[in-house]
Structures are given as structure tokens and as C-alpha cells.
Image (tube, rainbow, N blue to C red; front, top):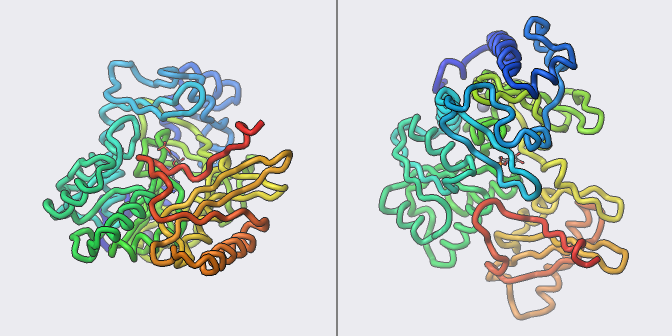
Length: 433
Ligand code: AMP
Ligand code: ZN
């Protein structure tokens, strides 16, 4: 078994020893900032009182609102002068959240990222195309420095301009790419419309992540693009990409436990869920100096995958993110996650590469409309044929989500594709009021 670095090959007891030591150090360090000093003080937590990893549970949670309330620099645990970069989340409401990094922080992030890419089979000889934005979004610079650290030749193409992306892939012999899943599906469709066979391209690995996607979508990307696609998970608050990554076994994402302690809790009671159950992922940074974060409530829903991975890595695996606690749609008393809808759609051969979920209000009743792109060859003039497809989609969706949404069939490439993360749900209910 090949590993990128020694920490990747640690045993369970070694991982736990490293975690405890780093947790104690982190608790010591965060007392430099008034926010944590006060929080920990009130909870009676001192570095000495952290004697085992179980003591983590005595530390209060940190939420996105806490980060917002400390905007921009309230959570710094170092002098401002030591900070060499900041990233901020866009944040649709209120202040954005800001994360600041020292030189050491960036160094350890790049190493985690390089390790992640290595674990998915990327090697120094690869030519790496990074199609995500190089700005406040951490997917750009985060992946970039990781791939460079690994030794790849990096092509920092950034998002958009598909024609140019294709030219880069062909001219520079791109073998691995970082691409968000919705753009990978768009790219596949774009190539198909131009009669370009992806098998003729040098691309062999796609690192896909940054947004929720289903196993069905991953399989589609792999088949359509003629490559292997690996799931990449991260969030700005925990650096960005490089928190958890799939290995070549494609059976869950290894979460790098020498850098993060992960917990999975019931989002309502905040108690840990039973082993293997789905809950909210809570993360604590262990290696950050500039802005460590304790017990961050990610709002992301996942579970630990029990047992060891066939690849030999001991770092625990988390399952594909099921959605965010905030993404849940409640319609007619039923809880629905957008990924349940994607799972149905992406398993149907007639369905194209894009869809949208619209929430509408008619009088006092909320309705869901699912707008589905249909592949060119199925988008025929025969109303009966289209009607049959529509009925089939509707009944499979009803089986999955227990209510019957309206299903609207639209032509391939007719749903606008914006740059960056796909917006799957459009809530029109407010406007109707
Ligand atoms: P940001 O901090 O803006 O990069 O957004 C981070 C969020 O993107 C996470 O909290 C997740 O909700 C989502 N995300 C990132 N990677 C994945 C992934 N591989 N699968 C599903 N959702 C993801
Ligand atoms: Zn593995």
C-alpha cells in the first residue's frame, strides 16, 4: 500500500494519541481570543481538564452565527501580522464568515490536500486542471496548492468557458481535474452535443465535490466522461477541500483525523448518534494556529462508515453527504431532501444532465414542481411518448418522496447553468405572498 505521508499510515491508537495532544494544544491556543476564553471559561474547560478525547464533549459548539458575530477578526488566535491569507464565504444573509490562515496553516492545508489527491490516485506526473473559482471560494487556491505540492503540473483554468477548458485538456494533456459535479455533467453534455468522444481525451480522474451529489450522478459522470470520479469534501470553516476524500475504493471519504476530530450528532438533541447512524457532522481543527475552531456544527448530514477500508487507511470514513440540515424541504408534512430527487432522476435513462426543484404556493397550498431536462433523443414530438416519460418520473418520485410533485419536461440545456455551485431548489413561495 502506497501512502503520501506518515500520518496517513497511523494506527488507531496512534491517531488517538495525536488527536489528544493536538486537542490540548488547541484548547490552550484558543484562549488567546476573547470569544473562546469566555466560552471555555463559562464551561469550566481548561487545557489540563482535557484528559481524554471524551472530554471534547465538554467543549461548547461553535456555529456559523458565532463566526458571523466575530466578523472579521474576532476569532484570531494570533497577531494580525502573522496572517497571510483570508477566505470568506459569500453568505447570502448578514455578514460573511471569514477564515484567516498563517503561513503554517496554509502549509498544512496544502499537505492535507496533496494527501487527498494522492489517495484518489493522482500522481506527480499528472497534469491537473482546476476548474473552480480562484477567489474567496476555497476550492480554487486550496486545490491548486495541494496539486502543486503533490508535484502535478497545474493548469489554473478557473470556471466557465467550456471551449477553452477543452482546448486546455487536449493541448496540455490534462489527466486529472477538479470539477464540481454539476459542471462535470454539463461538460459531458457539451461534448456530446459536439460529437466529441470523451474516450479520446487524456482525462482519467475527476475530483468532484463542493456540492451535494448522489452516487447515481457520480456513475453518470464516470460513464459519460470515461473516467473515475472521486468525492471531495470540505468547507471554508475547516480550510476548504482536503477535509475528507475518497480513496480508489470509492467507498466513503477518509476524514483526516490527524487534522480534525469528527463527531456525528443528532442535530436536535446534540447527543452523539449511534455508530453508523446519520447525523450532523461536527468538526474540530487540530492543526490550525491562526484561527482554530472548536466543535463546528457543519449542518452537513452524514454517517461514519463502520469498519476498516480495504485500502488500508485507518482514518475513519464518512458517507456521501446526504444534504444539509438547512436544505430539508417540508412539504405537506413530509420531509424531503433534494438528493432524494436527484437519486431518482439520475437513475433514469431518459433524464438529461440538469434539473431544478421549484417550490410554489397556490392559494394556501405549497406545491413542488420538478423541472427535468430530457435527453435529445427522447424529446420527441409524440405527446404520448413524452406523457409516458412524465408519468414514469412522477411515479418514481412519489415512491421516493411520498408525495406527487408536478413534473415538467424541458429540452436539454434549457435550464440555465450558472458558474459555481448549482442551485437545485428555487423557492418561489415568498414572492407569491
Ligand atoms: P463552502 O464553505 O462555501 O465551500 O461550502 C461548504 C459546503 O459545501 C459544505 O458544508 C457542504 O454543505 C458542501 N459540500 C462540500 N463538499 C461536498 C461534497 N463532497 N458533497 C456534498 N456537499 C459538499
Ligand atoms: Zn480507503
